[in-house]
Amino acid sequence: MEQSRFVSTDKLLVAGPCSAESLEQVLLTAKSLDCYSDMFFRAGLWKPRTMPSAFEGVGSKGLMWLREVKHRYGLKVCTEVASPNHVEQCLDAEMDALWIGARTTTNPFSVQDIADALSGVDIPVFVKNPLNPDVKLWIGAVERLYRSGCRNICAVHRGFSLADNGIYRNSPLWQVAIEFRRLMPQTKLICDPSHIAGRSELVFDISQTAMNLCFDGLMIEVHSDPGQAKTDARQQLSPLQLHELLSRLQLPLSDESQSAGELELLRGKIDQTDSEIVNLLAQRMEIVRQLSEVKHRNNMSVLQIDRWKDILQSRMQQADKLHLNSDFVKDIFEQIHRESVALQDKIAKSN
Ligand code: PEP
Ligand code: MN
Image (cartoon, rainbow, N blue to C red):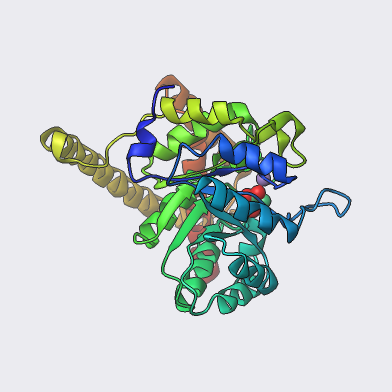
């Protein structure tokens, strides 16, 4: 098996089953991962499920199984905590790290309870993003842990639950993770492609995007026999699939020194183009201001729906001709129109 460059870098790897199901399943999976000596072995014990009739995890007895993984294979072990009671049991059972699930991050009361239970204990904590794409809520959870004295915190991007997630189980909305990175540059950020994907076939592609965006590592669900998994069967990889994925991953460098001259030239052109875009936007708003006066003099409404339909259609057609993604151009014009309507509404009220 080709050894992956991933393991020889400082990228973090967290891998293991969605849920611990039996001692045998946990040990079998861990055995096939013990070549990744620096990784964290994950397995959920208390599973947050939508329906109460679903498998809710094996609970506390699985802590002993994770300890066995730690002692037998020398892997660091971690599980999900959702309450101070879980934290206390995990600390007693010598877990090496904990993670806070997406549903828990969504609730600041729960996060605060967990942060209080961790006060003075410097164990690594992984913090999944909240279910909704609210970067502040995610940052707030991380801040609560920092304030409790946790120093080793790693955020986990696992996608967001929207009305329409397209081909994904959870929409990646990479821009939210990028915004997290911009606002919290000192906090490690890894990606959980399994919960974004919902299907094992998509896990590689999402992992590669995460590497292209300089994420610090991956949390991937791996099961000794994915087809038989009691939770998230569709998205879990077999150990062999994980080995293949890691060996195929390209790891681009974040170092710019190699191509500094070329980059500088192109970035100069981008800066110039962006400056023209901003100038054009200012010009357009000035025209909207004049238009607004004309509409007011003629007692016309701010919104003329047919005109708006024409604008959108023609801009999207133009985008198509220029081989631009027409949905991208549609989004931009929706923003421009929103700003234009807001300005006209304000002028109409002040007249
Ligand atoms: C999990 O990691 O098994 C899990 C439940 O994840 P999330 O909180 O991201 O849904
Ligand atoms: Mn899962």
